[in-house]
Image (cartoon, rainbow, N blue to C red; front, top):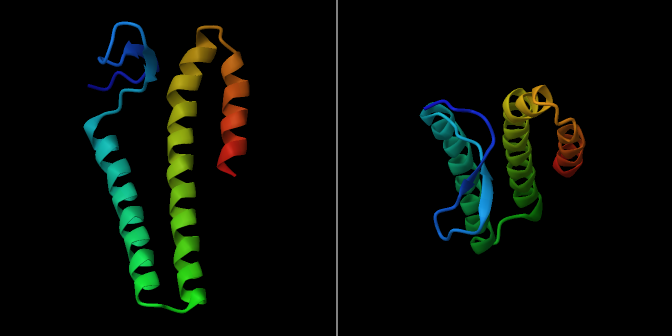
Length: 109
């Protein structure tokens, strides 16, 4: 299913709360999860480095790698958001989404 618009759907836990959802196809989900799994592995490596009393500089290099990987992940999500959700909202007349994206971009830097 590649229904890519940002929809408000019930979370399933109750009848009152509603959350925005962005449906993604299985391939995209797999790629995003793979990126996060690599980051998780890097973080586990940093934990092991602490346990092994590794040199601060070596740990900081790994911290920088994790930060860079998460930055790239965030930009991928933002890129998809701009191509799909944002475009659909603008086409439907909601230009407030531009301000939302600008705020998201500030948070990612």
